[in-house]
Image (cartoon, rainbow, N blue to C red; front, top):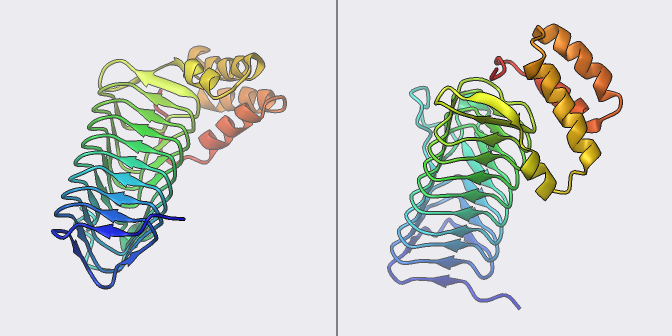
Length: 262
């Protein structure tokens, strides 16, 4: 049986908010109208959740997080836009996640099982997948896509409209201005340089030696062989016939609108 919903006497919850079973609202928190919060989610002290925002179940917003605020975009004129958050996310102190913009599709999305550590910022119209870790002070500009299992190290940032592919690792202080293909590790100075594949992360997630070897070969084709991008893509297409992972990497490259981080 679920625990009863508990709202601290000092919290302010708008009558138009919808709270699931076992939701807990901490001291001095604010939950506005058009906010839906799923079963078992905890809204910690001094958090604010403004709508329209939909939050799934068993999330934990630790404290002082500002969730569902207006997009920080001069083009925003008050149109109805949303934030959608999945399940089982851990959201730490002073995290900010903004709603979308009308021109950008209208929705910011955060998936499930993510960790957003202190001072993380997710801007308007971003799409964040599942099982990601955003270390302290990592920042996404508007319209950024982060696929599943991405790790963003502390003080890393992503330029608007960039994409970071699944299983990528972004090093501390790197400021991305291009797309990062799946499985790739980017580190070094602030400009960020590809430094190989995230092999340790892949091992932890159950990738066997053959899969990792195929991904390494694809990385060398793309970044080490010195090939023009068109020629590298031709070789990747041949490698993709024997590897679903390389096929996914090639699809990521071909579907991009911004240049690769190279």
